[in-house]
Length: 119
Length: 113
Image (cartoon, rainbow over all chains, first blue to last red; front, side, top):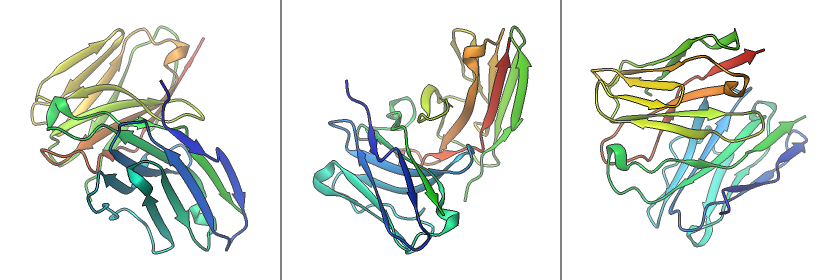
């Protein structure tokens, strides 16, 4: 079946420009996450959507970052006035609605990411 | 902010060797997951461990969860070039939610012929 799809796969932009990154989660997955990964290191949590609940935005690094999820499906991560330190791979993941702790935790299914380069 | 430290950061070994990767924190996990990521792709789940002291095996990979649920290890027996990749542990800190799975710093493994 179709996995998580992200677009574009690569984006080069000039400092100060705005960018939009798109994520199409797996159909039926109600939870959607955005992470940022720099230089092949660990993943930094950005934002989390779960169904109709208010999103958890606690990981967004500044007010230049925002995200939306329309109709409980597609999500867009927007970075305004990009800076060179925003350069990274932005990963989106989705999972089934969480139904319990421990072994019932639904694993995250990741897309292949968008590599953003700010020049 | 909870921190998950992984060691070593980098590991280069020859085919057939054994290795162990560690994931440590000062906090207690509800559960812990291990992922592998290959260049140009997103991480892929390998295993989830839940119970303190739990050991899970996936072919040549053995995963162990510490008794106190603060640490975990991944042991690979007779490594093969196909094991090359970035190994990430990820901890779930809150019972009843997976809303902010926190990822470790990663261990980059290279297995050469």
